[in-house]
Length: 111
Image 1: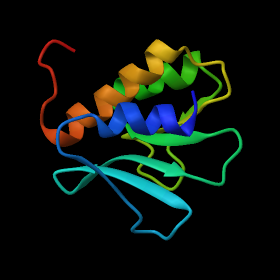
Image 2: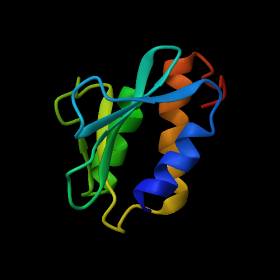
Image 3: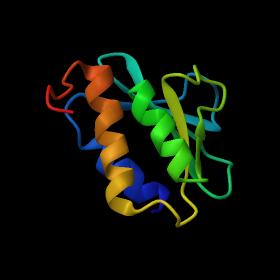
């Protein structure tokens, strides 16, 4: 997944906006003024932080070496996902959706 693909998908969500509150090297995507993705632009491979249900966050970290506790975030609620090709695209999109839903208050009841 490229940065453009990540942004196109994430910014298509209702009320999503991009900001740079931490300077030009860290892109923050917000919904209703709250952070749902944090993307450090100078990282190789590309990575992003996404909010996650705590139990699911642990399961994902155990299953994928490229999903780790959220860098500079509350590690109980945030994961860092490294886009090195080892995490399936479908799961990446699901994690973006999940973070957006948690932050926006649109979380699905049947998770």
